[in-house]
Image (cartoon, rainbow, N blue to C red; front, side):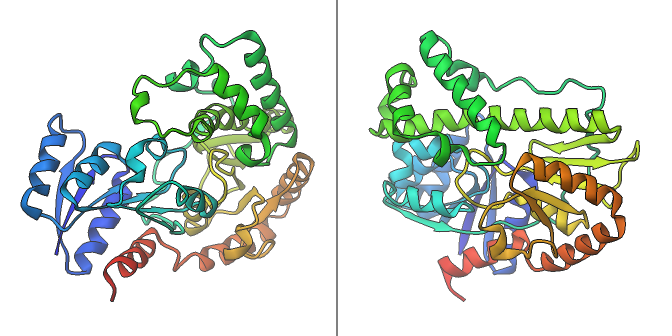
Length: 364
């Protein structure tokens, strides 16, 4: 059996997929999505069933369309949200097999996707967190919003802009709650429908303003909440005289040292506000590397981890500050929990998730 692996989203995850598929005895052909002729290249491989299925990390509308035309299965493994392609007609093709690490989002997609949508927990990557984190002590607090997010409020009425900004402030007060179910109620969606223009490729957008507005709002609101949380962490660390390091958009490390190692201090892992549920792969990465994790509470955390034994959580800003203060002092307790967490995730690798995926599709 031959698989066409289209690469261009996350090199580490794509390498893991390739390794696992080869271990299953599959012939793996690689194709770069950076190629200017990728569309023709994909069509060439799909012609006369030269491959049995196409696979990508993330969901790509163009690939979905070409696989649908050729009647070839398109497998996408989605580990980050939001995905713009989920709100286009490409998501509804019967040839799609979508694996996603957000259980509630998988259920939602099943309402309008004709293909298979399957919940697949994520896992750690063997070679993750090998770089050097950015120290935020003397650097600008925030990256600028993406161009797309900036466009969302261009040309809308002052009333709408004020309405959205007030939602952001309200969301910031609760700090750790999830944007979409808690903030995007029906009234908000209706207001966004009236004021946010259709995208230029509107003929490809699913005829449901609710899902389109949900995507737009998740990009904008989720980013604002995460910016607010980073600001809180920065101010707290500055006031307490400790250092704050940023590994990626939702992983921070607080330490009393000027230089940090994975085993130092506390890792603050924020929840992905653009999703419904699901545990960010970054949490698995930190635990696998032996770091102590303090993360926002989500119910599904208890499906895989024991709070206070493998990691710890916070449910309010006040609780977060108290636990940071406690664990900075209790190094021994920190190290004990980190060791338990590392042991717990030893069999929760991303490669293991891909093995489960192949088993579901191809059988043993």
